[in-house]
Length: 325
Image 1 (cartoon, rainbow, N blue to C red):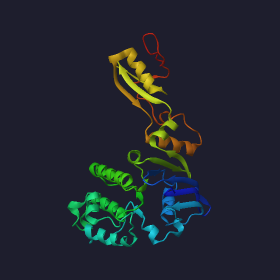
Image 2 (cartoon, rainbow, N blue to C red):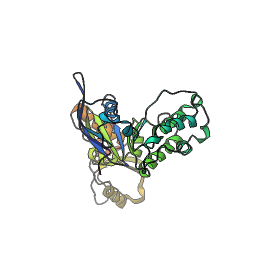
Image 3 (tube, rainbow, N blue to C red):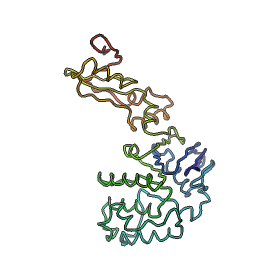
Image 4 (cartoon, rainbow, N blue to C red):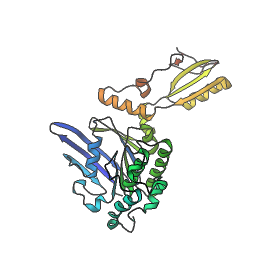
């Protein structure tokens, strides 16, 4: 099956400055992909090219099988976009606005995808049923953000672009939005390209994570795959008889098993930690910017707490684990 997003050697130059230097990636139907990167990395430029709002300098790009530089209205009706913010008419009421916008998608309905999304069902999906009669000018920031999401999906898009989608959401609204994303990808088979600075959200939502830095994709994989690529060792922390210990091991399971074999119930406050997405992201960007690969995510960005003893080497002994301090 043809990928929904097919990008190969994408390049963009502004004057004498190369912003994109050969970006390549794919995304399949129903896949949630997070595009991460520092400010100025080229994320916005990449998204605008994919949406058909900016011409590229070079490279192969196909979005839903079409070159976005040549996409027509029928092609655009298959896309959804949730911007960080948008200007609107405050006098519109929620239901009226969504019904009006939805009418533009009706001519592009197909046997497979009925467009638009029924208004009341859509309003319920984004958690605005109690406010459907309200004028937009009377909505809170979080309610406005829910409306932004509804506007982005009113046409039942096959491909949805999300730009910082949960900015302004409270924890409950954020959780409901995550459920909606999973519904769109799992049930409706919608492909979603997410850009965010919230790495925790990216880790929860994305099947794959792309890290864009220096005009290139420097990493592509699941959060777990990227963490293992950077930090092959896990960090194990525990306490025994009031003393805190920290140790790094490639095989955390074997180490913990041996720890309990030797000390049993004396082991307390056990933690096993691999590099988080934030650790991984910071490490990869640091590596790209400096050109010097760090030893691991934790080695570059973490310093053990002063009271803890560092076990640099640990091997089974007759009655103890040897501690090199």
